[in-house]
Length: 159
Figure 1 (cartoon, rainbow, N blue to C red):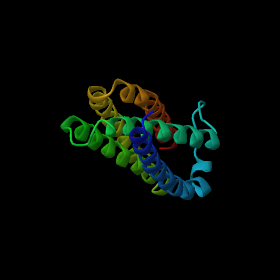
Figure 2: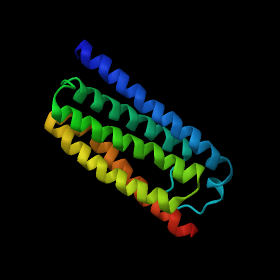
Figure 3: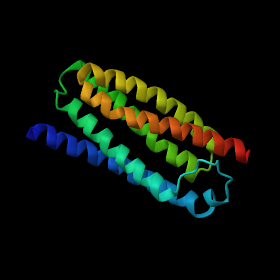
Figure 4: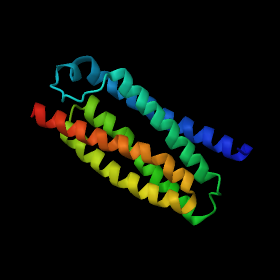
């Protein structure tokens, strides 16, 4: 790993973890009073495991973004890929706010569906720049698919 790749990946991981931390702050509101009262689907995951998986996803996302960024931000494909990445990161953080803090599972579900579409576009753009970076986002896409199903079931069971 080159020094440039390490520095840029570390910075990108840090940015992703900051978004994760902001999501954790939003989550605390709903976890305390609203979420425990919800009827949950049979495939419910313990909150600690759920949080650990998100942290792992943020690390993978950051490494992927660092790999793309290390190809040179002056290149239009790199810029396009990273703009998509930034947009999906925003939608990612917004989900926690919608679902836990605002307690709006239907709107949060719509956000997750948009997030998944943007992740697919991000993977497409990352693949143009680096296959490795694109492959690093695949577990994240799968995880968000799981989150969509879970969010849908929460909405369905509690409407």
